[in-house]
Length: 168
View: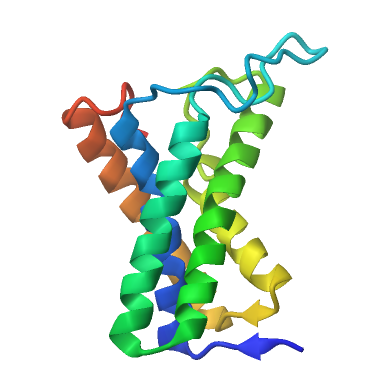
């Protein structure tokens, strides 16, 4: 049975996805690659060295912490549950984006407009829907441009702080 989230709860369960997606940059791309350097038949890596176990863990921990804080703030266990799922979905969506970029021949750090900004958002939404948490459709549509703008702004800031080699 599906659980329909109201507009505020829809926003609150998405915020941990933003934290999860942004946290791995704090590691400055250091860590153990998830794909262990695996190269597929097309001669390209499965994901690339930028997707690490450490980044996955720190992203999940940051996202889960934000989910716990928001859930405590509004006294709602569904916000915690949904926020944790959204955080995990965001990280998996970002990995899927990296996989797609490698398959179409884009190197690590190469820009892929829209894909770069919405892969993690789509992953979070998919994870929530697979758990039967239905978000308000107007929030989903309205939040997408906000996510794109925030993604660009935070990546530009991370680039200026020398946490990222490119501003996208």
